[in-house]
Length: 411
Ligand code: NAI
Ligand code: MG
Image (cartoon, rainbow, N blue to C red):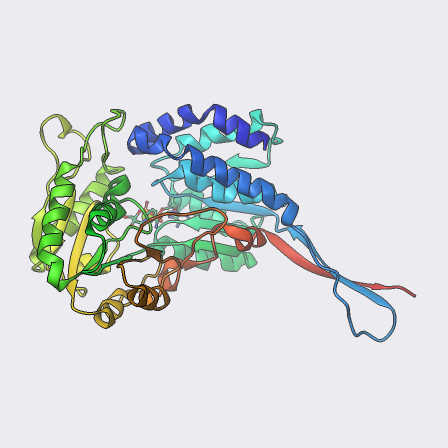
């Protein structure tokens, strides 16, 4: 709870550092105050929830049997660059709640928020050595942490490819793993949806943070009868977004994190065109005052087929692929035709359609008539190649604990 207060007092500075370091708009980073603080309070509350059970037994004689919980030990937290201000707390919060220690390896592209947070933890009274930060490249510092025999658990968020490397490295000492990996989440709009909500909802499900969000709703399935009108409104919404200097309070979308990421995203834009998708909006790097930065227009492809590369691979940029469908059966089949399973959404006014999609979409989170909301007490996780190990909720905290059974001979 002291950590909560110190982070609250210093949040403006942390938000500014995050915007400077990774380019997310200042109004966006400032808006995370409540989520971060509630997350810290949630983990603080979980310190009182780390308990075992006394369990009756059928052993021959007089025995008391129970279970105890113990910290798993040293947790390595490998954090991506798309939002360390928030994502570091999944590791720090749970480590502090369970009595573990942590070694955090922030991404080489965005380490400042994590470094400053570590200083603030000391200020809040967390003993030195409990939360440690090691900066460096993934292939060096990250790989060393993943392979280190003194590390008992890795909590990783990032690409599926790196997740696979971490699984291999973990074999050396049977490290416990929590992996939150890539996504290609389906966002399904039915003709009976409230389109005044669905248009901005579906647009920001991808454009938010310039598309650099693990559960971005990048495959936008739109019922064929409304496809044309929907795309028109989506384009209009995309064009209304102000892309620019992250420190300008009127900016809605900042740049991509790096030149490498810009090249990746632009590469996918040209693949989309080459594979026959129609470019309905955007697709260009911004010129003029913004030419020196990694700015790209909000981009919308329509008439995409689910088998195209832009519908199969995680782009991690502001690129929407609109894929038409006819009915709920087809929408579900296409939505699940992916190797990922992180998020998904349905927009409809029909309970029947909603429940069909809610049960049918193979993903760790399904949003209904909204997108991207996450609560620390509810949590989220992945199906398939999007990883395993729930983030948030009591299961998250469980992952930082060993369970031990105790058998006491009373005679
Ligand atoms: P990445 O998964 O390689 O990097 C994430 C973190 O892992 C960073 O801290 C990095 O230093 C570390 N890392 C890299 N290689 C490692 C290794 N061998 N062992 C241990 N740690 C390692 O992601 P990257 O290369 O920055 O971005 C590439 C693509 O990955 C993006 O375009 C995006 O599609 C995806 N990505 C997905 C994220 C998500 O939240 N789902 C977050 C970041 C990237
Ligand atoms: Mg990488």
